[in-house]
Length: 428
Image (cartoon, helix red, strand yellow):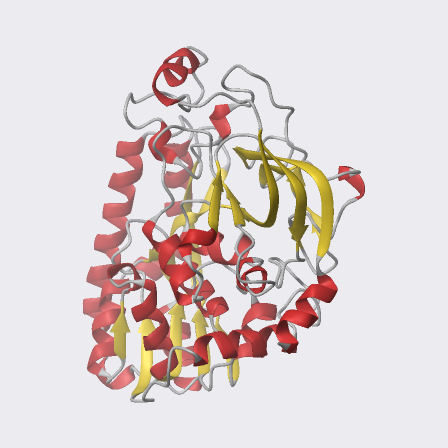
């Protein structure tokens, strides 16, 4: 098969490699991931590591050396992507006294003595975030599965008892026609006599338009994977993929935007209510896709070419989500920049949490931007109804942040954001 031959040309293989479970996510040195393979000459590796940006720059960290006692890493950095680690005992990630309790309830039932296996293909860590799973850590999965039909596909998990991958992880593999029996979850240090790895097919945060996106060969490979599922009828004119039902990271008044889209004849999809297979079929059926900026957009990276126009409604000021990955896939790509203000809180450590904030739109810029993209909502739009939904969403989001009580300075910061003269004029 030509695809497999092309991939084998890009495959790198290493002997006698120790692979660790996921040790930390976003540790304090700035890396996005710690764990996985102890590559030789780690600091000099680029191809095999986890990279961002147009010119590939590794943003992972060398795994910590394995020890017999648990934990041999800092478990405070796992709950960012595996929050249920602390849920059973309501433990604070910042409380050193929590560690003995964690050890009693979460230590794996096996010791840390490394297993030794013959061969595997490294794919990446598993996380509890759909967009991160696909775009950040999943860009080796599809090509790795085509190297050969039998070599195990390796994914790291936190070394925590009874944690399982999210259900959508298995649905993603099913969509990619991967037999789940090939999957090897690394929960303890495991040594491989031969370890293979491919480069990431796509990378995040690429500013140069010509770098970091999918190659033509990769898109043809994805086309072939999708074609094996059979054709779909192109019976949906326009589909709006909404975040209105999510607790955070949405537009104020997005539920009214849902209503207006429906009244204008646009099909509205809430992706969290359907499985991955249904999402993929819906996207393939549409002639025009409109997304609220967020994780669901990354689902398109599980497809090849789409004969569709793509519109992304920005949630963050002057931010364009993954244009290098999206533009090569679609007939046209347009970003509607109608953000008036992003209201956001603080993490327990005092960092801004932008993606969990609530976005207040400039109403006229939204309507004008959509109309210029071929979506005219003005005949069905009621500004008073929109304002009522918007203000109710802002009040609900503020109540949620007060209940969370994440940082002492947050409420004063939110009050200052809401006192902005421009914001007061917008919300009337």
